[in-house]
Image (cartoon, rainbow, N blue to C red; front, side):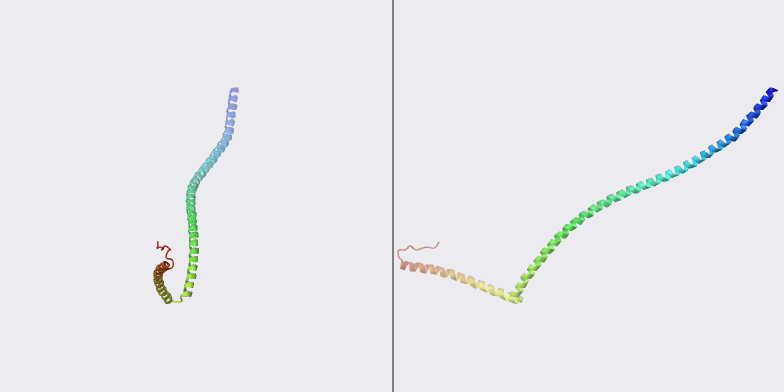
Length: 175
């Protein structure tokens, strides 16, 4: 009987321990499952966030690459524009110098024109004076020719006179 009692006590003790274990183990299993589900949910959320962040990073990287290309192109355009501006400044400077020279030439021409208009109020007077000058120049040429002839005659007459005034003196011949 002692064995029976021991056996019954052992069975009751086993059942008690089984019940206690079942209650406690059930609680632990439920807690473990809840933690697992929580971790699984956090993992899914983290994975989704990571994927989203990767996509945003890829988009941002592509955008940054495009922005760098645009910046390089803009820098090149700026450099080209600056070179063009420098060329235009040189052209402006040259044109201003040419304009100043042209204005000075115009002023000089206006002064000469004013002097011309003072001397010759009408073009007919200028033509008349030009014809008169041509005629006078022709007369001067004729007079110069006559002067040469007369000078030769004077030299000849002086030589003849010298022959009579000083018969011993040698006669000078022209070169």
